[in-house]
Image 1 (tube, rainbow, N blue to C red):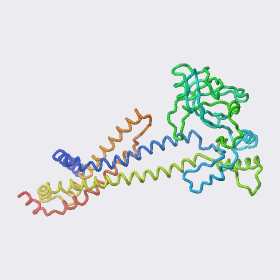
Image 2 (spheres, rainbow, N blue to C red):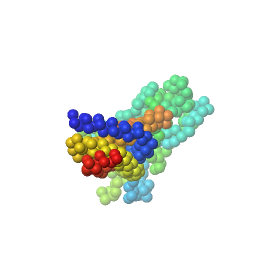
Image 3 (spheres, one colour):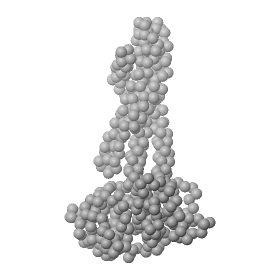
Image 4 (cartoon, rainbow, N blue to C red):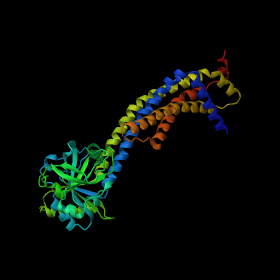
Length: 416
């Protein structure tokens, strides 16, 4: 009950200070507000980006390995690009050999992508991502269809001129018309739309499937030279259930070395990539950005801390006589100390709450009008309030200590 009374009185004194000295309190709390806004807004933006990144990585599949010419590297200072550029691209025939030889894989697919303009009734969509994929692509990576269907086995084998098209291309070229059965001009050839991708929005890794035109690789090979060593082809391999990526990697390494007839002493002339490489690289980037955010916001929090300390010193000065009366009536030093500490914490948390409110309004506006989903998480709200409380505690400690050490007789004389 004593502590509840103490908290209630401290809150009342804090509110009196705000009401009586609005401008002074506003300017003093501005530093806390700006500091919390700076730190938590940075964390909110990058938490939202990281959330979307991890979602996209999950769609790629944590148990999927990518056989490619180039290894993925996130800030690797020893990236030997001059060696990697001499490597051959992965081939469609190599995918077929892996399908025959691998015992640990559940599904294997090949794909190659290029940029092309897509036309329909004289309207051109520029820079569409045209993807040629083998039939088992849907077994390796999740395909979210909006309408229509995936390629049939016969369409994939014969290289039929059919395609699954992204939402953005459909909207620009066909508007609200039913796209299924309509034709597009790709590579100068008519291609029939048999399916559409669900609208995805911006993708962390670049273009989303809203910009895709996916077709059987046996049709795309008529226009893309699959033997070219600069086409960015990939073989995706999904491991069986309970098979580790390490075991699958070892098997694929042996198969690829055998297919390419590499000598025992020769280096691998291919790369086996996995999504954990992306995750680790972005973890480092997000860690650096978070540190920068804390440094920038730290200066504002420091200024805000001095502002809280200033308010508390003025508050102690104005209530010196009241402190003397309280102590003469038996109030202990700890009671006076806690009273002013609670007041400092309340004031600081008020500034933090204003900063969090601004961030929340910002996330709503950005999500609604900018098309980027931002989420102010409970973790960041708790962090913002905790930092505000700590700043209030630290800033109010010396003023509260000085108030608790006042002599009651000298304090009551201050009224005269």
